[in-house]
Image 1 (cartoon, rainbow, N blue to C red):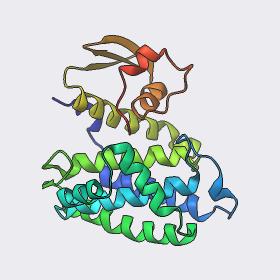
Image 2: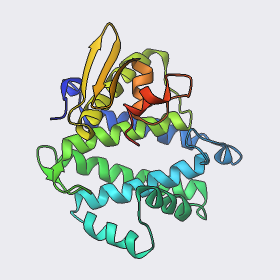
Image 3: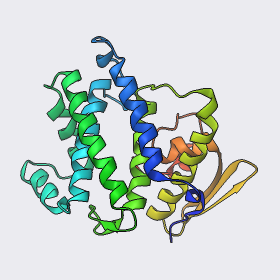
Image 4: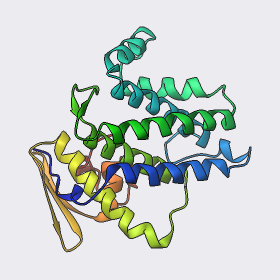
Length: 233
């Protein structure tokens, strides 16, 4: 069973609002030259990250309208066979769209989806794995928005940094134990002790978050230890 300890007291819809506002403010301030700068997603520019976010909104819309099966079939028909293919298709689709137009479309679609998540609270929505609580999907969405905000170096004030990292760690804990049901995670002295069928290791909070998000630097921990956190946002 997924460990919901770190979700207690958190409102995923408010977290989505904060992170999406952060993304919108950041993208709105970019110059024409900035859009081509590299991001924290290997091989992707800032424009590419926004294109990916647009594709994510299409998926969330399908979740809320119970149209995920049709969306998956659409991608299968176009040749996509994996999550990487889906991500690449999203980036490709946005490549020919002017950055400001892409941003305007994302903001409108994102606002609609965030309202849809709030309205669906307490119910199940459609997902790639079938019916799933809207609240949990909203937590995953908030985490993904935050990680991509980090990827494009969106500003995080010193005053919010600690609180933000704490909730990211809480969602990461939930997500990891959801994917790996036998995993046990204990927070001891500010470190996260992770035990799975493949071993155990302890991580500081930031490495734990970045590891689950697939963004840990090579020197943060051994590759074998980071494999314990493998999730793939």
